[in-house]
Length: 591
Ligand SMILES: Cc1cc2nc3c(=O)[nH]c(=O)nc-3n(C[C@H](O)[C@H](O)[C@H](O)COP(=O)(O)OP(=O)(O)OC[C@H]3O[C@@H](n4cnc5c(N)ncnc54)[C@H](O)[C@@H]3O)c2cc1C
Image (cartoon, rainbow, N blue to C red; front, top):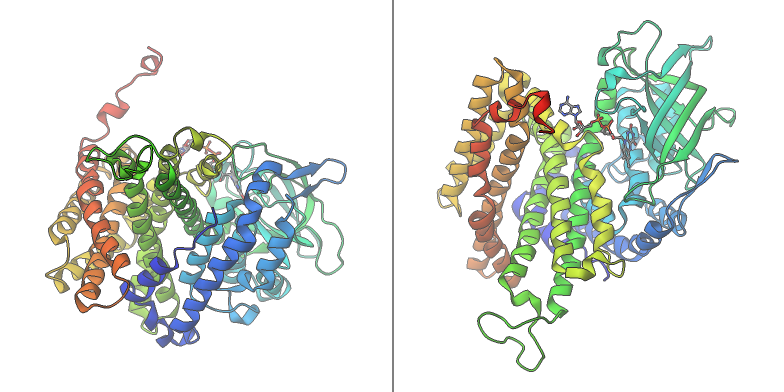
């Protein structure tokens, strides 16, 4: 089925709920008028459906091909043409800085485009996706000289970027990396080591690939405090000489087969330091935080496509009669969409997808405010929210995006398991998003172990304040008591962590994942209340698309009846502590 971009929902969220129609009042985003934002949404939807989606299945079937003779990688048929069209349309430059040829548009729009690209071909989207992170790391931490050499070409899409962290013996624990950087006489460094699973490490979409590589300087401490970041181009920009950074092979993997996942051998390749020596993790975190938000959009994008496919199927597939009497009396059976259990799977997808989209675009909007608001306090408050919500967006949207793709597959019955339908590919592609950019378990640890205590707890207090402020201002908010109750539970869980974790860090480790889910469900509850409130107001005034608005109100009801109650057992999970988890001795596991 051809992808239908959820433009109505996006516009409702951006303009009617989140207030992006006012963003152009900030000087930095003066060009981002509602008309322009609407045009970007419409054009991105068309591009996704007509240029990107047609490459998705062939990408899965062909995968990338490695040539050991030339150590090069060929992407699947159609990828190069689609990438070139993406570049020609200026999509790689959308929110990039004006000073280096970017369009300087709001980051929220990039979130929107990421979702659409990932709905239609997640693998293809990864090439510009990783490049975008490289641009940000370089822009924030690189010297002017490096920026002048690299940024314009990366932003225009003429070159792509990679992120080289993982090594055969370490992924999560990057303090263990062994890649070495030895100073050369000319101010550059010789980079030596092997990185694995490097997305876009080698491919045929562009002329040059720019690797951002974590490595250790001689004598650096053997922890994350001893890591530096280097920029290592495939071809040296001044001479065009081939740098010895070679692809040693491709991973054979479960999904995203059109994305080249490469072993990269750095054989004394020339690199240049980005940022300060031994401070590479800070620079890399700029890239990783951004990539984490993008990966969240991958989860949502796949879930949206799965919803569209499974909804279409459920309307066509005839099986059994409705429990309340025939709904298709002239046919041999009723469409399966009449059955409560099928509706449960569809509703869960629709309501969670829309809630997750609201959470992501809320976070994108805060990111824009954090970069552009004239008032420093407003910028800081927005940045606090982005920081605390980044692991939540990454983990929750990829966990539930994957689960929703699974529910979509379930709606199709046996058809969902066959390659005649795209659901099995969506499920396979979506699985990795829960793992890379820091597994979702690590996101939860980042939330409870780091973000909760930053600035003496200011980030989380700020988040509570957003919901409390909303409830105070909207005494008649829909589902007010449920939102209030969820917030209270989140506050209690936070207090429980503040009391128990400092004495025993394993308590934080045990509570991390359910706590992250509790925060996600609470925030999404707050956003569903806002969406339902706006929808009801518009219905009362006779404005807007009635069917769309009625669906919003009904979806909110489903969220509060069926999904938010998970918060109750998450609370029990958190506050029951670590004991039953840690009770096993080594000999108990296989008993
Ligand atoms: C398709 C693909 C593309 C990738 N792209 C890139 C890329 O472009 N660049 C790059 O550098 N890397 C990339 N990676 C690597 C990816 O980021 C890592 O796989 C990921 O960070 C997890 O590391 P690991 O696989 O070594 O797992 P491990 O670190 O070995 O972890 C294994 C398990 O243990 C858990 N765990 C580990 N430590 C802790 C802890 N302290 N507390 C609790 N749980 C813990 C983890 O959550 C996980 O469940 C890619 C991987 C794949 C498969």
